[in-house]
Structures are given as C-alpha cells and as structure tokens.
Length: 257
Image 1 (cartoon, rainbow, N blue to C red):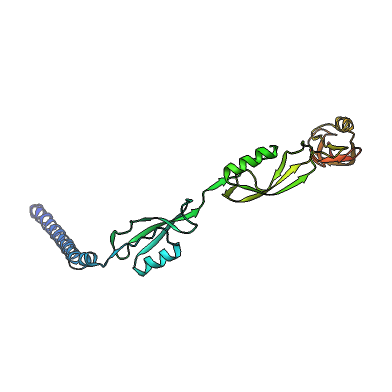
Image 2 (cartoon, helix red, strand yellow):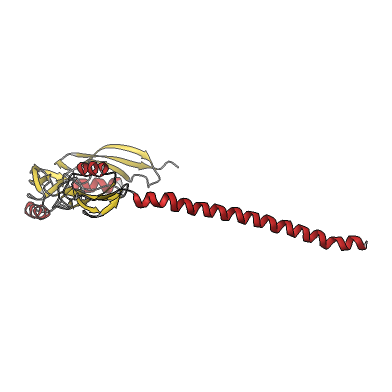
C-alpha cells in the first residue's frame, strides 16, 4: 500500500512534464509560422506593394463617362461610377467630379470614383387642376416647363379653368419639358353635372336626381350587408355631364335574411 502511495506523485509529475513538453512544441511551431509569415510579408508582399507602378491621374471632369472609363482602364485603374447628380453646368452622362482628383499619383489597380451628371435638375409636376389658365402658365414658366397642347373640353367648371393635366402631381420632369392640359369652355347649355347618390336610399336618390332634371334608369339589385334599397354604385359617376332628362343607372342593395 505504501509503495502505491509513494508512486502516485511520480506519475502525476511525469504526466505534467509531458503536458508542458507538448505546449512547448505547439508554441514553437506557432512561433516558427509567425516568423515565416513576417519574412514573407517583408520579402515578397511589401516589395510588391511598394514597387507597384504608380500612375498620375488625368483630368476626367467634363469628359463623357464612356471615354473616362476607357482611359482609366487603359491606365490599369478601376473606375467606379457614382450618380447621377443633377447639375446644369454639365451635359448628361459627363463627369462632373472625380476622386482622387486629377494630378494625384496613385498605384495601379486603385479605385477611381467618377460622379456622372444627370443634366438639368428635375422638377416636380405641380397640381394645376381648377386653376385659371393664366395661373397655370405662370406656375409652369417659373419651373421651366411649357404647355405643348391645350385641349378645350366641356366641363361643369367655369370657362378658362384647368380640368386635367398630362402628368400627375409629383411626377419628376426635366426643365424644358412640355405638357398637355385640358381647359374648360364651360358646360354646354342644357347640360347638368351628375350629383352623388351613393349610400342614399332609393327614394332619396330619386328626389336628388329629379331636382337636377335627371332620373333613375336601369336598376340592378345586389345582395349586400347594407340596408335594403341603399344605392351601392351609380353610372355615370359624380360630376359627369348629362343632358336634361337623362337617366343614371344604379345598383341597389338587397338584404335577404
């Protein structure tokens, strides 16, 4: 028993010694790898980087983007296009800015950023509906836009009022663009704008139409959760011009429970 007790510290010591030896071997291998990596960096990578051919950047501003890209590639540089940026001083697709700037010496394979012009700044189409022709023309002129065609149409609006426009409000247009407008010449004598009768009862809708010298025409009954005899839809819609005595077709709710 005593021999076993005496041998136990010797076994533990031997095991620790083997472990330390393994750690020293691993540390030595890592150290050798680090030294090799540093030597490679110093002998190969750094000289390649330092000795890479240097190029003086040409002035690309004002040049067409295709030309600028071809020139940079011929110098073994990497063009990166940015934009468009809208600037009235430069034509569309021409370089308005470069980074790094002209005259700077850079190494081959360096990225060169070229910002491309989109030409004249864009403007947002305003809402011209229900404005007078004079006001609409002044608004467009201030934005650098013009009127191409002015179509005269019959409308419930007074004469000389803009009824409709080619582009919706908020549409981006280039300065100098032209647009089509519709202008009211007023309603034809004897024409009536259709009132809204949706969500009215059939009897109430009939009274509203009669006050405007109009009548209910074709009735179509549709199952609905709305109250029975409620107008669901109408044709023509509100604002459409009809002759005196014309009729309006309707869809009427029925509730079959």
